[in-house]
Amino acid sequence: MKIANLNFSPEGVYFSDKNGQKLQSASAFSKIMNRFFQYFLDLWLYILWIIGYIPSHTVRKFFYLISGLKLGRGATFHMGARFFLPKNIEIGEGTIVGDHAFFDGRAKIKIGKQVDIASQVMIYNSEHDLSDSSFKAIEEPVTIGDYVFIGPRAIIMPGVTIGNGAVVAGGAVVTKDVPENAIVGGIPAKIIGERSLKQPNYKLGRARLFQ
Image 1 (spheres, helix red, strand yellow):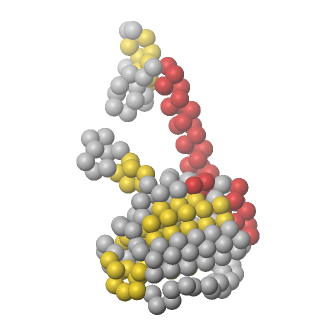
Image 2: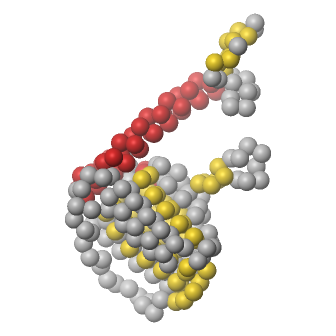
């Protein structure tokens, strides 16, 4: 008889993995503890998502910081942000993220200073290996340089590096590295121009209040 991953047989009681393979006691205990940790993380991410709708940058930033997310001076998220693992996310000074952004965080996400990220941008760190028999996940870091602009509803895929001063057009799907000062757009994103401002030194305006 089997209940979830707990098996009863004439030889005794044992745990099995998702593929039905018998687990040693130490391995089973480790998996059980990890499962409870994942339950706690799921609950906390749900709470963090609700907190993300509180119309106060100060309140939201407090909870993001205690969750491990690193925010530079003046950096902020507008309402509705969601995360998978905040502790791997680092945002530089003055960077402003638009509403309803999704930042994965299962691998490192590092974003530079004075980066303007529009609404509903999604940054992913993990994708499934379609050629693997177990459909395992592949996790890769994402790095975004200083003074980058990312348009609304753009998607940044795992392993991408976006150079300083680059521009990602709205709705683009970025699957490859973007050179400094390049303007990219489309699905998948390709270079469609070059930014004339080569040495930006501006500061973004203040984030919208109550948003």
